[in-house]
Length: 254
Length: 219
Ligand SMILES: Nc1ncnc2c1ncn2[C@@H]1O[C@H](COP(=O)(O)OP(=O)(O)O)[C@@H](O)[C@H]1O
Ligand SMILES: [Mg+2]
Image (cartoon, rainbow over all chains, first blue to last red; front, side, top):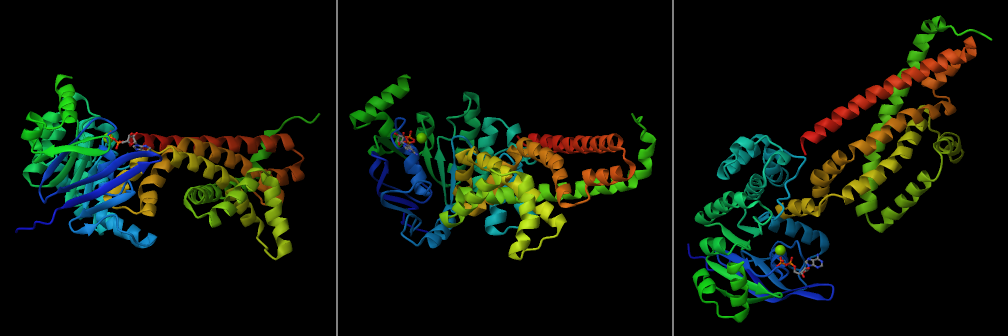
């Protein structure tokens, strides 16, 4: 299949928080099966950009497209609500602080969306949860509650929860930066496994080594703009822009 | 001075027991209504359009600022005048339910507001709609987190339920009064009633502790 249509396309994305311009016209696209890492200093707008892809943030200008459908299209309120809910079902998002539902068991955390949104039967949803947990190596935790899990385990459950909706893309917002260092690898391993399965992914991260390992393309953002983008080898070894160079230097020395 | 004589009590226990039964029925039904209505009010205050929100807020404000006894009289004696004739039992239940619903609503509103924004975002990112998110994610968590505060309200409700005796409902205090008017033994029978309230309270507290423990497990 030679589908050249990008999976994600962002055109001229602009976003203000009050007087503060957080995204200053961002363009980028992600091909089917591609993995894009977004790096940059804190406050540069990485999270805002990622969150505008699934419309957790509303752009003030520009367009976001998912697989040929405009995410932020203009519709009447009710129609838009319906549209956005169906679009979001096709995008998994993983948050820095996991955001597991504490009142639900691990199985229920994973099964609730397929059950309530896709009408899946309870037994099928549990089987699906088990399958997804197997994928992230936590099948034995199926009946645990989130409070009983380590940070790394929580994040893996959060990934399983997103995967259970069989999304077309996965969005990661600093998935490992709230974790103790020794728990980072287990989460990275799951993400690498997804990469091997050609999941389309946008990964906001501050782990340069991981970005270099897993990404097909790296985007360096600063002050709400894309400063430079390229293959990890090029961007990390021979950055063109001075901004990129000084950011990387700080990171590699720090 | 007349000596105390509790040997008279057993003879009247069936009557007192009936009163106890109605205290339990009225309290349990009112507690459930006050929780459901309280959550409804909280959701309206937080999320409904101004057209619905402001009348509800006015109503809540009026109910918070007036005594339960007055509310009961208004519902039972007052509404008849405008053609709404509610039997005493239901007047009592409605009055108690609404009175405590207003307080519960305040507790739930604060409980919902204190939930982490990430919970809603996670649900929305999965594709849940706004009301689905409230129903499956926000409300269950708010209910859990407010068990202690709402539990205190329910302990108050149990005690305050005695006020419905004022509109002639034969609950515990009312039946004690009936017995006393026959026996002229206020001390023995008020003390019996008090002991029974105390037992009910112990049971309610045990139930609440059980619920709290169950909720704790999932945290
Ligand atoms: N909800 C918000 N309200 C106001 N300002 C915000 C909000 N979210 C983010 N910002 C601001 O927008 C800028 C970009 O934030 P963010 O996208 O989180 O950056 P990054 O993820 O790269 O650290 C920061 O200056 C931040 O303070
Ligand atoms: Mg961020």
